Image (cartoon, rainbow, N blue to C red; front, side):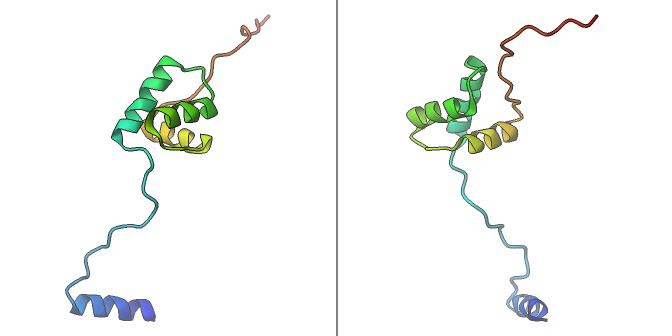
Length: 91
């Protein structure tokens, strides 16, 4: 019931419009995302941890490897390292 009361109060104040969503501020700005994109193009076989280390050196923003993976997903980049052995042959 309290939710309905809040909506009625907000409507009376003329503030019924949707509020901005919460959440955390993104650590990498557009320049940092572009740096990550270039890094992946130039060094596609690096691990996520290595990309995180290099981003910290370049941008000064400390990221975990899981955050790097999330940024890659947002950028539409699949992260697949090179296969170290040749594919097996089918008989």
